[in-house]
Structures are given as structure tokens and as C-alpha cells.
Length: 537
Image: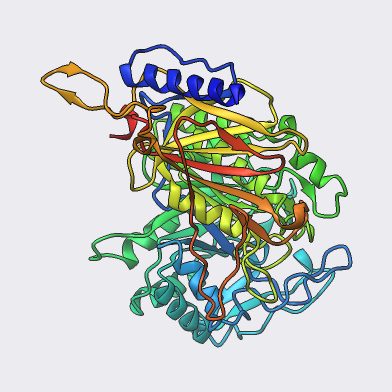
């Protein structure tokens, strides 16, 4: 009884200080820890459609470590009539989809050239990535675009950047990109009226490359060629697709040279890939995901790339073009289970702080890291994590720090399509429940003002707490298992209904004087509408 009264008084004092305004950080050491938000100005801005997912080209006989995890879930073979698939994409309104992956640089397009028969990928252990050259039939491209239009997806297409290359003495592939087939494919796409948000050149050819590499100076010339193709193909159109490159792993010197040769405005987006957890076969993946020091390691890449773009004097922005965490198709019951939302949401939060505009998850479906189950198409836990982010986290990124354990990860954005802020809290501890107050640095909440005089509105703690109600979304694993492929939202299992409809994501309403309770191994989104943030005007 006495403890409850003390907690109430702490909450009252906190909100009373908020109501009176002021520039000092509010400290709440009694009864809870503090997440401190500086909402005076945004530290970065993301795209409206920040959440993105990928679709890949792998055939069913793509196998890693003795497991074949792709099935009929890729661009060439997935069931485009599946209701869950359609509804899952539509729920984002819109979802960016990046079409590409390892095999895109050995993929040709069936544009009617009799010298290039359209044959499927065939397994060949001596070929790059274990498959021969494959082909995208135009009738399949038509089917895909019908689905994209119906679902409202925004499409980024990864082009084959290895056509025409010849081996060089240093082991790289040189010579200019032979863009004949790609240009023909782009012209066909334009003639059909298909809406492409961006054309991306190549996959993982930067730096030391994966399977193959191309020097930055040659790559820059090829990016300029792609821009010319796009300018010519879309002449007379109100808008043109983005020019995107290189879709590879970050290498500071290589990326700096590419930027220097394409600035100030010849390349719209610079994309990089992230697989910082290592191979999918690693038995320590969960340990890495739950280690805050390990998670922090990727901040260096985001910071370095942000610095390169800022100092270059370019209009180019940065995206994460592909991120599956663990390479070679991920790891079943880790990268497709609840525990992976800790890594995924931390990545979304961290990358956005460094002005990353879009983050593409590998994959929407396919492999062991899909947002959707490869066989049933039902959403894995990360799908709901991504959807909550998309609906709650606005484009303006705010500074947020937590004054307690390093097992709590805290990220804050202006609320999406609403006033106030949304705070994301990730608890990497399986033992501790945290009670967290949200405090302010240099701002005040929405208050009632009249004739220039500051006065109290409804005072929390005196029976009128409804004025300070917030909405909370608590994510926990089913049966308490981190490796569960089912997630609970506020205690209820999330799953599509019999018609394949994505469930509603309903919050619980909490009195604003109370701290946010973050259970062990849980994730909380808290929308706080009464938190006044000048940055969010």
C-alpha cells in the first residue's frame, strides 16, 4: 500500500514538473529507471517507407549445411495467389520490396534475343554460387508486376552487373558493363507501364566482393551508364526511378571512391549489406543477439558511411539494401524465431539514428530468415515487429538514452501520424523486469495555455489520469521460448485468420503516471501522445 502510494507520488511529481515545463532532465530514481528523450530537434530522418524486405532468385535445390530452406518461395516460383502473402504486403501500405540477391549477377532477361535462350538456373558446383546462368521469362515478370500492383508494393530491381566483364590480373572482373540486355529489359518494363521505384546495379561486388569483385572506378562508370539508360528510357515521364548501387558490403575506401566519382547527383542511393552475426551454422547466434556489446559493433559501419556521405558534398543517401543477420540462409528457430526480433529491431533503431533512409530485411519470404514462413506463408515474429515499427515509428529520429542496465536498448521517434513520441524498449535480459519512466531533456508536454499564462491542465494523480493515457504494445514469445515462431502481443497470439487477414495490432492503455514495465526477454513499443516534442511539429 505504502509502496504503491510512493510510486504514485513519484509519477505525480514527474508529470507536475513536465507540466510546468523547464529545461532540466527529470530524474526518477525512486520506483523506476529513466529513459531520457531529447525531443528538441531530430538527429536524423528516415523515409516514410523505411521498412523494406527482399525477394530472392534461389531455386529449390539451394542448400546450406545440408538443409534446403528456400522451397517454392522465390521470385521465379512462389505462389502469387496466396492470400496471406498479398495481405502481408498490403498491410504496410506500402512495403518496399528489393528484388535481387546472389544470383542476380548471373540472371538474364528474356527480351526476345534468339542468341540468349531463356533457360532456368541449373545446379553446377563449379559455377559461381553453385548454379549456371538463369533467366527471367517476361511472362513471369508480367505476373510479378500484377502482384506488385495489387499489393501496392514499391519495387527496387537489382540488375545483373557482370555482363561483359573479363578477368583481370588482380583477380577482379574488369571491362565496361555490357548493359544491352538490361537496357532492353528496362525499356520493356517502361513500355508495359510497370512502376519501378529504383534500379540497383549489382550485388556484393564492392570491396573484396563475394564470388566476384569490380573496382570502384569501373563501377562508377557503370553507374553513370545506368543513369543515362534510365534518363533515356523514362524521358517524358513525370518522375524517374532511383539510381541505386552498389548493393555490397561496406568498404570505406571503395565506397569513398564510388561516391567521389558519382557526386553530386549521379547516384541517388548507396546500398550496403549486413550479415554481422556470421554464418547461419554458428551455434552461438543467440548469444551474439543477446550481447549488447556485440550489437553495438555494427554502429561503426553506420557512422563511417554517414561520415563519408556528409563530407563528400553529395545528394546520395544511404540504405541497408539487404540484411539477414546470419549469412547462408540464416538458422532455423533462430533467424525465423522470436529471439531474432531483438537483433532486427535493434538494427532498425540503430541504423535510423545514422540517417539510414531505408532498411531492407532479407527476406520477405525464403530461407530461414524470412518475415513469412517459407512453406505456410504465415508471419514469423519479425513480421509483426516490422509492422509495429511501420505503424508507430515516424520519420523523425530523436535522441534517447537509458540510465540503467545495458541490457535495455532504447530508441525513440516522433510518433507516426499522431502527436507525441513512440519509444521502443528491448530487454535482452531473461532475469530482470524493468520499470521505466520516460523523462524529457529540454521540453514540456502538451499543456493548456491561456493569454500567455502557463497553468495546470488536469493534474495526474488526482483522479483525472485519462489526460495522460499512453498506448503500449508488449511483444513476448509464446510459452516463454525465445525460439518460438509465435509471438504474443499483450498476451494474445498473433496469427492470420481463416481468410488470410493479418490480425489487428491492438494496444493496451496505461495510466501515464505509471512506469513502463518491460518484462524479461520482451519488447515494448510505447506511444506517448502527451509528450510534447518540438522536433515533431
